Image (cartoon, rainbow, N blue to C red; front, side):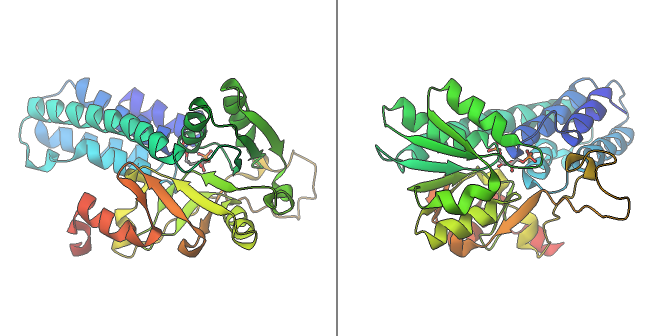
Length: 308
Ligand code: RUB
């Protein structure tokens, strides 16, 4: 198999490449490179090898639909092609287009989202979302005086990445432990988080603990915004599929020998926030309500999947 595909899948699995947007672009990029460097001329063999490459990439992490969308956007139209040369050109173009549109979407979301941040706002964020951080950084660059509280996001501690990103921008940043969320929520004006997947009925799947932020925000009457490109909307949920919540190894939670062998460790790394806790989804097609996700999905993906 193409070495770059295998390496990319491994880097996604071990989280050297992480975050839903980055893994989508990495998956799309791996398909583009696979096509570009494909040396054979037999179209049947190309299809077989491509199917395997797709499977390897999609098996690397199960929850973020962005990876599925990035990979599928890159192979779109290959079923109608009968020459390897044409397939090579199509997949390379698709992949480059997806990556360019993805980067552009983040910029658009930053512009739209920054308008929801007012001078003097105190904001909470969770995990390490490049899109939520772009929104916050844009507001800061516009000269708004803001404070950000970032959760540690155990067990992987993506919050450490977040506070580094925010501090580099010169933003007033405070790190809190995950258990401090409810206590600190009283001081917040808004919450901004990213998304791994958004379902057809507007539920958010994001880093474990996101739903606790949403619950605490709801209780404290704090606005809860999700920053998400539309390729994090799941067309699979449109046809009834469930989102698989990834569970990762116990070594992320405890060190060897720290607990008795008889004790089990459960390490789910994403959770589900119901639509009713979400004030708005900031996407590249605008600020939308969770109830509008279905319409946006239909426009973007059509209803093809419903027939399968
Ligand atoms: C990352 C995470 C992020 C989303 C959005 O989880 O939950 O909030 O992926 O990220 P992990 P982005 O660290 O397990 O990949 O906005 O960068 O796409």
